Image 1 (cartoon, rainbow, N blue to C red):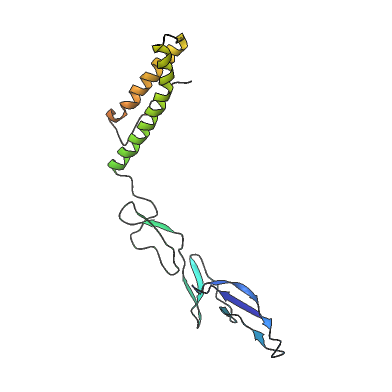
Image 2 (cartoon, rainbow, N blue to C red):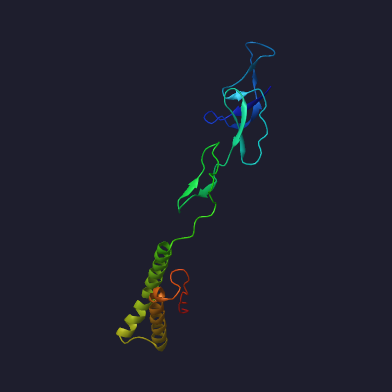
Length: 171
């Protein structure tokens, strides 16, 4: 005999199975496990789920996993059956604020300055010790010019919304 199983906590339909015959009662008697029903569930459409409330099948909204934004940067994710996306919600996050853009740009600048410092240090050591080659001297000058340009990024007219990042010297 076909049975229809539901999740023990949510009542959500999870699949069908077969009941075992009741060997003690004989023919026509079946062992129906907990959280299983004999009546077939209805078909659920898009963003719908079928649940059994203990008495009957119901079709409910299913937007689990859907992320949305309301009035800020905070992202909400629907985790429960029957919950819908609120009126006025959007799937797109609001654009970053000027403060957020500035913080991101300065963090990127600082990372580039760190990298430039790593490249400059051994070249400067060679120059300080009088052991630098002509190629070392040229590379040192290019990296220092790059580092100055990166440091001046906040002075650009469109900062922080539009930034023209300097290109590092080729190695």
